[in-house]
Image 1 (cartoon, each protein chain N blue to C red):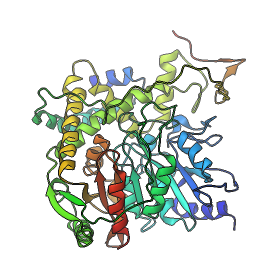
Image 2 (image 1 turned 180 degrees about the horizontal axis):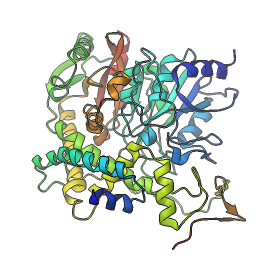
Image 3 (image 1 turned 45 degrees about the vertical axis):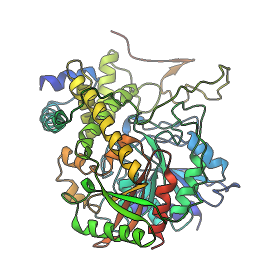
Image 4 (image 1 turned 60 degrees about the vertical axis):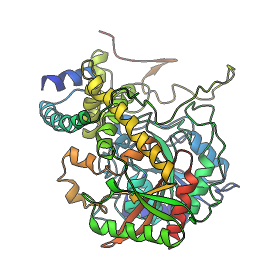
Length: 435
Length: 88
């Protein structure tokens, strides 16, 4: 059976691919022998790239995103585009008119989102595979944790975003998923580093992420706001089990406080929606993607084609984001949220003076069932992100690593470290992985 | 309701009456939740437009030839022009 045939067979069962690339031979390099999947919102030359949205249906980029260029240069072959929530707007990967991926551990349950297809494929792949994924508020950590794989969200600015169909520019980060910490770390090294096409990339050397030491002497902080109320006690038990394991390997464990955690959800959603509503203004049904026969004046045409091409959650975020930026409300919402973000960043900076790594559950519960998700109001969807939005607001690196199961569903341990200190979180993750 | 209609018009989104009603109700619930930020003392706090300090990234201003066809995805082109809706 050819390699693409095998992926099709798995995709028929789990629904994780939006567009297939052709069969290509492997090249030489660190990714030789690896299949590389690409989240739908990252551009691949010649391959439909629609970010899970009908407004971009049929858009075929004439160029590769920088992360794709770098993957090809190391010998990886691009196999296709993985499913996601429309533009990344979701925690369960159900907000899309296209395929909704199914959790490999129980197909009645969500993979998590928004990089759900990437996590699903990473878990089911029985061949060498790494996934290009992307996070704005937890879109790598959530699905990686619920599908039982390793996910790395790097420091904001570590990886070029040139060629990313953006959601919120001050939050978006391209990252990776893989079955093992070592493979994920290797792949992060491949795609990191400066890019003349993205001025927000940090111009600092990329360390060798595969040279990982032990956790002997590493100071690990457990944020008290990330445990207790709202976190399933069985999930908490698994997380504590792995934290104790780190302690037995020589790490010191202490409790730490991140007092503004409670406010991070509102701050995050205000900023993300404000930025999304401006970013999405460019999708007007002209030049690329969904293009209807021209009717009416430009306001009539744009208003109609956008309403047709954008889904429910996208419309909600545009409305909310437009509101929080509106004259008269901007100071009370958007500007206030940016100031609270400063407080959230200060919390982390203070914590990293005392500890090297923060450890917490990645998600408060295991993957929910689709029938449970259907009952949730939008605000309950947003509340599911309570443990992932703060580190995303602060742009610090985070790694989720499988640390056990609850009723057969995977649980992830979230390891966070200071800006550009990915290595510390990876070292702890590798130690947990080794059991 | 009026507010959602105004926002939808500004955002160039035709909403059905049912959508307008639904978003108005959800907007009110979500904004109520957002109001918790009032509890945070932010006097004298600078807003963080980015999570980390970004520095200017300048490069030589040299012409570069792009190999892409900017019209490759246009459905309705005439010669090298894109057909669009009339202004008014």
